[in-house]
Image (tube, rainbow, N blue to C red; front, side, top):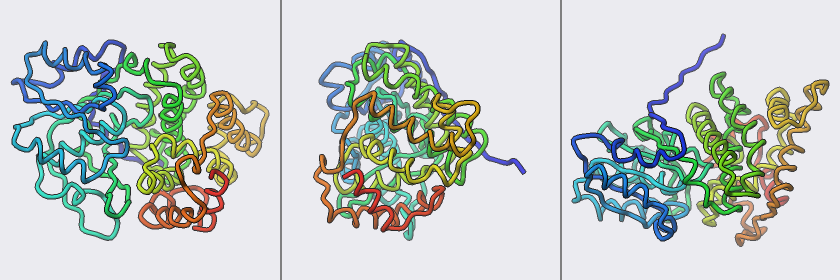
Amino acid sequence: MLAFEYVQPTRILFGSGKIASLGELCGSPKPNVLLVVDKVLEEQGLARGAKDSLDAAGLSWQLFTDVLPNPTAQSVNRAVENFKDKAIEVVVGFGGGSAIDTAKAMAVGLSHPGDIWDYVNEPNRTVQPITDKTLPIIAIPTTAGTGAESTPMAVLVNTDTHVKRALFNERIYPHQALIDPELTLTVPPGLTFSTGIDALSHAIEALISSEARAYPAMLALEAIGRIGRHLTAAVLDGSNLKARENLSYSATLAGLAIGAGEVTLPHALAHPLGGRFNIPHGDAIAMVLPEMMNASWMCNTPRFAAIAHALGMADPWDTEHQAARKSVIAIKNIYTDCGYTRKLSDYGVTQKDLEDIARDATGYMAGCLSVHPRKMTSAGLVEMLEKIR
């Protein structure tokens, strides 16, 4: 019997030039706004449009730029302490997933007592509830990857334990998502690729998960097809607005898909890689995804065949098995076309570290492995990691 539940409370505004709408989106009467911005974007002047819109609306606003590539609970706690007496009423996240996740976590921290890690969804401990006191969140992505603008998650690292887990609650869905593809035009090629692969992996994982549902699967397939057609063009020519628009749209669709579903093996490994080695999330995913495809395509051939068809690799006369196998080739071709060659060793990961990563994946990230189509042991994960080290 077909059944599913789908919740998406975020109002999504998509289109070039939409950054000018920020001030009016903050609502009335005129709230006091906290603008959370990636420091590099602030230094490059890319947040000027957001500031101008806030000023044009006559809003009072504060600026926070100490965003870490892998936000930590400790950095969020310090930020909350600095702004808790500023009477913040709306939090705006402007930047990549790190800035948006930081904004989400601050919206909770500024409205709830205690350490932000108390609210992180971690197995085998009591998690404090996130309530409707959470401050309204506006998300403005400047990369096309994480889909954080359309998910109820904010991922943080605990620097004491190196655990990377998420706040997960419907109350941290952004109230508004302002997606302006023009903001992505200056993203460099390497980051364009890794964030695009993050979005592609979100869509693939949402599709192949044992928890996959019909509606999110439809969103995922649309995202996969568009990323396949436009990622290489955006990497090779960052000024290609059509490609940028399609990637931004795809990242949002993929975010909607995982917001209603589950991520699988790539995230089970990417979180420990980020938590232990501070590897940017997109690169962690990008290193893992091809090997996941190679190891898993035969375990859910209908869905992997659909991936191959969406990417234009499969022929109409292919059997399901043949098409599913071609999904691996399709992914590898994208990497070749974009020239991506990073390995774990580039980030200082040694052979002796692999068992710790696998232990984290089968430990605090076991939920992601439980919905992956191929059941993986620690030894199997180490073998996979060896291939990308």
